[in-house]
Length: 288
Image (cartoon, rainbow, N blue to C red; front, side):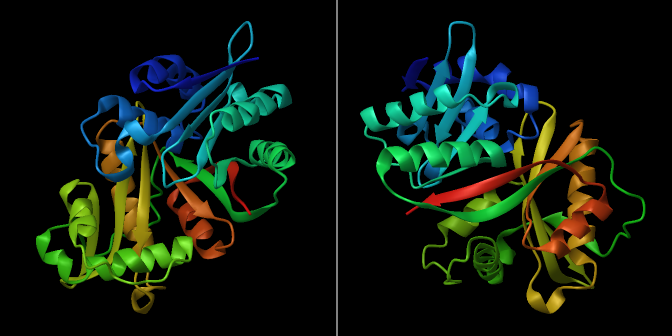
């Protein structure tokens, strides 16, 4: 096996884009990151490839394993055609060690995540825990059974009155972080500046939000879905996600993709009613 560590996002893009496109929906995160890095227009925060770890593991015939990490986020992996090769995994672990790359965790398809984690802790003499058990869904048509509620619009500057609190509520729900609003408003204004964050209003009151978070070749991601606790159970999230999904499809994308936490049966049920179907399961594993 041949381990290649990349410093040039353009070269990494050339070597991995077509390979990851074989499972475009499954690779929403790593493929989306590669597209963002190669485009180079947005280098805000983690989006600047200068700090990324990028590597491939190849045999004599083809790339077998792709790895990309965009600090502070965890390592993401893709085994070509989902054919997991333990020799390729061990080669990557060895390459990470020799490159002195510290890995706090990994997020990828469930079987690959476990196989990598076991190889990694065997090499490092550490342990791991499963932090999130997720499912990746895709949608090609929005169900006609989802009622349209209120009015969907793009986020705007006046939303700064509540957006920081919603943003931290989202982070708390998804990542278990303490919902402390940052004193630097730049992080929240960035979400508005993308022109991809949508707010659902009902009777002129903001009630839910969702964001178009990754635009790829034929599919597009939906994320940043949040409804304040006091507005839940009224169909707002369903309507908001359905409307954002319709916008994506109307723009010519063939599918919408999103991640769910399997520990939250409510959200999984909501998305399936909208028309989302399972692609595969994904684990986020942290090393201790």
